[in-house]
Image (tube, rainbow over all chains, first blue to last red; front, side, top):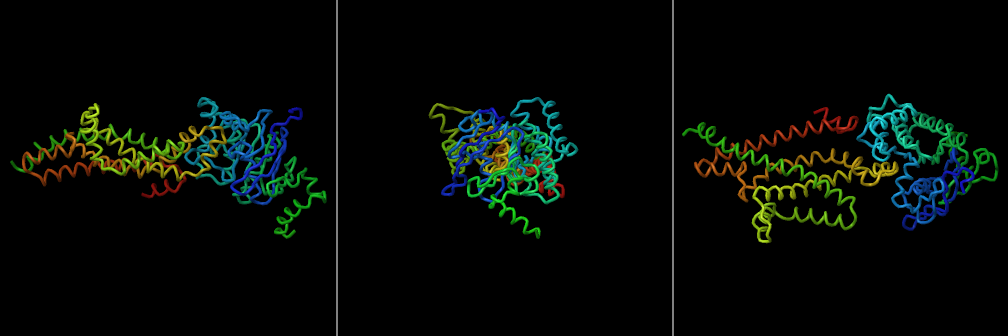
Length: 251
Length: 228
């Protein structure tokens, strides 16, 4: 099954909240080093899908594998898989009582069992990676949104994940801060990090994605490379969706 | 005998002995009351249905009955089922239970105020729920619980006087003994009152120093503390 370097395999994920079917059968494979971008209207289950992958939300049906090992129904081993699947949230969710450095260090100390020097070294390296080593001793409340999001990316990177899930990482940021976060993400993609990104940033999607999946009503309605989706006339629904963005720009 | 002789030669030495007992009661009770409070709050908030119900019943039981009654049961009641406690031990156990139950409510309120995202982010990094609670949730919640917990600590200072009702001669009891022996009530109890006031004032100052010390830079709490 792993012949094509498949890191993550998602198969037929279903999830309902009460009467509402949020996910109605989602399947895809993620190849090492690729960036998959999920777009689509709000409420179509994109965030739920990401949470079903690392089991923060338990899917009703369907299976997920990381490197040929099944994540779904893995019991307490889920905590191992979650180390290997980084996650970045829309609202950063930094630990409010800890400095940027300690935010990155905490799981290294408690989950990976590193000693203090190792953890500190590693955390500083990751903060450097996102351009924030000078902010190591600042608390979340002292950081801009863009800085906080970059710290949260460093926190995910510190666990040496095989894939990182980005759940609308720039939706809470103004355009300037959005750009600094997207630049970090773009660099990660270029360095070969495997990423799943839920976003409304079409520019980022078109320039970085290896594949764009357009989700609507709990299913993947259209999918393809950025080139194909923007130029091939058969992808009408996504074009309409993107058109709504462009109409505000007067284009 | 003039008033000064009475206060300095008789009353204060007697009160000093009582004060030592009061301080011992507090020092033996407060840490365990805090630990119990944390345990009960966490059990209620994060425990399964059974544990959380047990914690809830415990809090209701303690809140719903007078502390004095609890002390009577511990000291006068338990010997009938073969458990004999010294008066001091009975008092300390009673205070721990009472202090813990009330503390748990302040801590639970603080736990409820921590946003879900903190737990989600911790779990997403591979922490177990217990690790997340210990390293992420509680350090934040306890900071927010400090004002409530300090209130409860101050209550403890004052309800420690109930120990006198089960024969522990603490501060109030020492005062009462002197007052009845010399028939000097007003001065005696005013001095006793002043000693409590001093204890509470010291506590209040210590808590505000503690609060400033553990405040997280950049938050509104630290800003308002800095303005004080």
